[in-house]
Image (cartoon, rainbow, N blue to C red; front, top):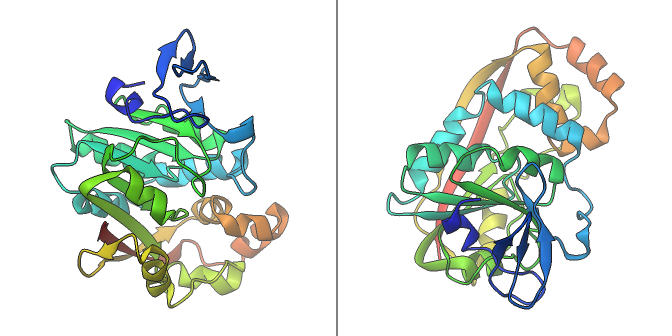
Length: 275
């Protein structure tokens, strides 16, 4: 676990700094948190993941889908949106660490801390980059991160905790938020029964962050087509929340009825906010 990333972490019980001790992290008050053999540390209150954390099946699908490069333009846009001067970056809802890892690849001086509720995702995030640490926590709750310790916070397809994001950002820091547009995956929505995207989502995000953040300018649209095989389409659905609303057998039947390959629109907004 990189020292600079470790320095951002705080004990979720007392707020004290954390230091390595054998295969654990310990604060001055004696609270201790085991580091898993995969390299991440669990700082979840009570030790259990919140309801809705990504399952092992969802994570396997996401790893395979992202490895195929379908969302590489989104990762590039996220990297471009982070100020070049940012040296400490927190990714709230990091998943497998894909977007933070891409950012660190492009920024040799930066270090990252990925936060997520899913131990299955964090097993990958902890190994996503040598300059990245990973910790389990509830992104909706109090983040186990020191005040004003991050130059940037990433929030990609993840819950937005405006008050905590502002607390952990340094003055002048940047919050980068990625949200889908109503055109995102539109070709699959009806045939596969995917969850719909609110056409007013961007405005809802602004309202959710109001009082903590203001938009630094217009959001950057990222929109392009991808051609997905049946396997890629199945991975795409299986890695997100829509997977909880259809059985694997039914999903297989629906995917088999699509053209092969299926041309699908990827459409998101990348927005930068300042405290």
